[in-house]
Image (cartoon, rainbow, N blue to C red):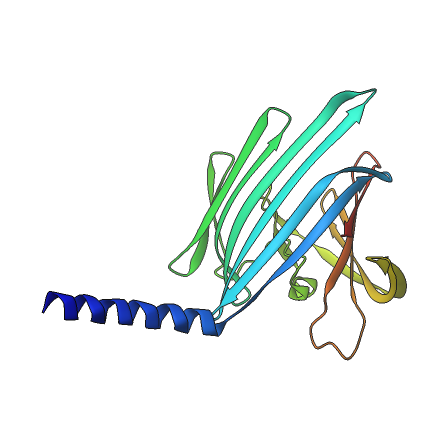
Length: 219
C-alpha cells in the first residue's frame, strides 16, 4: 500500500514537472561587455526565464575602473525580479559601490507594490515596471522604478529614428530611443527588422552627470 501511494506521489510530481517544463520557453540572455569612454570595465548579464505567464529575471553586473593601476571604482550589482506579465510582482536587489551597499526590496501586496529602500517604505501602484530594457513595453511608460536605488522616477522617452549599428561583428538596422529620467540619460537600440514581431534589445549607452559615457555591447 505504501509503495503504491509513493508511486502515485512520484507520478503526480513528475506530471507537474513535465507540465511546467513543457509550458516554459527557453531562457533568454543578454550578455554585455561594458565600456567606460571606450575602455572595457566589466560585464553585465541579464537572464530571463518564462513559464505559465510568469517571468523571472536575474541581473548580475561587475565593474572595476582603474586609474594609474589603482582600483578607483568598484561596482557589483545583483537583482532578481519576478513578473506577472508586464507587471513587477517582486524585487530583491543588492548594489555595492566601493564599500557602500544599497538594498532594495519590493513585493505585490493586495492592490499595490510595497517598496523598501534606504530604510524607507513606499507604496507604489499595482503595476510597476523597472528599467527593464529587455522589455520594449517600457518605451510607453511615464514612470519607471530604478532597482539599484529604489527611486520611482518620471521618465520622458523619445524615438530617435533608425540607424545601423554593429552587433556581434555584423551591421544591423536598429531603432534608437532616448530615456531622460532625473539625472539619468539613457539611449537604447532595438532590432528594426519588421519580420520579427518583438523588438530585440541590442545595445545601451548611458551618459553620467559627470559626462562619462558607458556603453553596453552584446558579446
